[in-house]
View 1 (cartoon, rainbow, N blue to C red):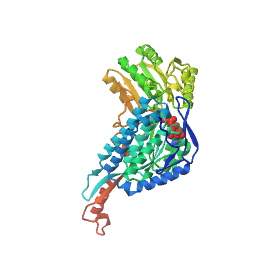
View 2 (tube, rainbow, N blue to C red):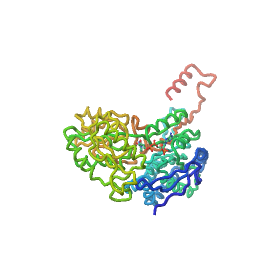
View 3 (cartoon, rainbow, N blue to C red):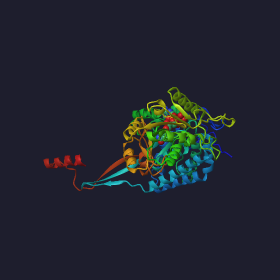
View 4 (spheres, protein in one colour):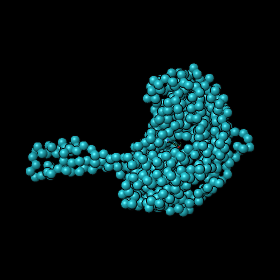
Amino acid sequence: MLQLPADEVLVAGRWRRGAGARTETVDPATGRVLTAVHAASVEDVDEAAEGAAAASADPAWRELPAHLRARLLHRIAELIEHEAEALSALQTADTGKSRTETRALVHSAAGTFRYTAAALETAEDAVTPSRGAYVTVSLHEPIGVVGAITPWNSPIASDAQKLAPALAAGNAVLLKPAEWTPLVALALGRLVTRALAEAGLPAGLLSVLPGRGSVIGDAIVRHPRVGKVTFTGGTTTGRTIAHAAAEKVMPVSLELGGKSPTVVFEDADLEQALAGVMFGIFSSSGQSCVAGSRLFVARGRYEEFVDELTARTRKLRVGPGTDPGTQVAPLVHHRHRDAVAGYVDLAREEGARVRCGGGAPEGEEYEKGAYYLPTVLDGLPNSARVCQEEIFGPVLVALPFDDEDDLVAQANDSVYGLACGLWTRDHRTAWRVARRIEAGTVWINTYKQFSIATPFGGTKDSGLGREKGREGIRAYQRQKSLYWGVGDAPLPWATATATATATATASAASIDG
Ligand code: NAP
């Protein structure tokens, strides 16, 4: 039995009906309205930000030793694991994703809290070399209030990727989930509220504020109490947020879109490459920032590879996320499905060959859902819009390449730089090309594998900053340097009897210190 969260939002630790508009959330597999949530209002954001500022300054939190903050994160992980099946079912209903995927996302969220707890307990600050008269200590302090804005494509995992390090760093968080998929963030909010209450910590450390991005997201970004925004979503939105942050001279982390190339070299293991390319684009129904949406195949193997890929793609099972046999689940929303279909229509107008897919599946069982067939296109140059713009659906565009230089030029001819996949048996080819590709992540003979210990982020229009890894917590802290005077003598410049020699010494010290 699916447990739906109550129609309440979390404002500075208090659950209540949001003062914003009532928004229905829809199961994309059936088109059925799941429930309705009253969004937060701008006034709710203001109250949440004030509550967060007070909670982050509360000595009960601010002075809490790292190992006790780590204990809180472990407890949150435990609660997520305990509720894993319910959270997975909720996320499948809200996003349409398969249960296999939502189970993995839920366990990844728990793992993120556990890894961050371990990183926190083993983090160190530096004592820098002294110059005799002073000792310097470099500290990392919390920013205070962090705004975390997340998209609809992997809700609980992206929420955890921001919430865990921001709390570990000693902040309070205002979390804004996407308007289409608010349910799992609200459910996560219940678990965090419970863990905070058990530990006797300020409830205002977390607010969960669903609502329209241009209203609630914008109010969070511009709020004077918010000292940092961490954002995952589209590049256009990221740019808007970066502009607003520049006005406040506020740090931002931006995890943005992609149009990632996946490359099959002449010598690739074709079985592995076929499986990897298909997983890279069609898992999550292509709704993944790192989807390998541009396929480059060495010209000598192009027809053979694309023919086989097309044949296998036709056999993929499209169905609801609740069916264990489903390989391609519905898209998140009917409006998004229509946008994906619009891109394929555009490709047809531009002269593409539709090798397979290219429309919604037929049959009564698909009529009401936001389904789209996995699609392979080719016959277009890399400059075509479907090769340059992020479609965020199960649509792959295939292109041939002649040699390494041609491949690198085409692969890098994109505003994006998020990820890349290389399929080759030659480790020297992999090394050379991986170094020349403009991307934050390059997978070699594998694709779309993630380790919480490995930093992740984009270059070019794909983003700014890195998440995950041991340094992930640092993104939510400010560095402060302390100079600790340990000399017996007064500073030379201030003494009335200072000589020219002493003055020279003082200037040198202030330059090289
Ligand atoms: P989006 O439209 O940019 O929305 C992302 C979040 O930002 C949502 O919560 C949205 O609210 C909010 N938002 C919208 N306008 C805003 C504004 N003016 N100020 C503040 N917040 C605002 O992206 P999406 O369509 O949900 O997600 C898909 C995109 O995310 C793709 O481009 C994908 O590549 C990217 N993504 C990147 C990564 C990565 O790690 N690099 C990971 C996952 C996804 P609403 O709910 O009202 O729209």
